[in-house]
Image 1 (tube, rainbow, N blue to C red):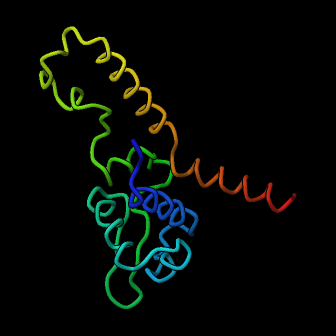
Image 2 (cartoon, rainbow, N blue to C red; image 1 turned 90 degrees about the horizontal axis):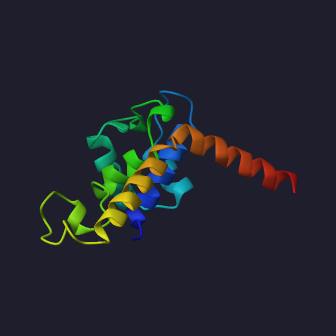
Length: 144
């Protein structure tokens, strides 16, 4: 499984918005420039984030985008699921009784365990944490 390019850009965009002063509206052109994304693609990736309440949009003169939640309350899982839907490693985990082999399949339990651990890891990292880590990494680069 590989996350889509849209999800990758969505994560980068949310991190960028989190680095701005709270409640500051960021112009679309500034996001496009800093994240190296086209306006049309940015609109596409932000729509699901707006729909689930991670990002707010302001229309009109001076309009743009800002986070709708505190960065500490947004996890990587939230962004991934907004862009791609529920995280499921295999069809047998989408809903119960989808697979007739579930009761005796030796891989089913492993898929469920791996999916659970992946969800746990992605829930464990907030956007606030990602911003902090990025600052630390950039500081190390500057000091090299």
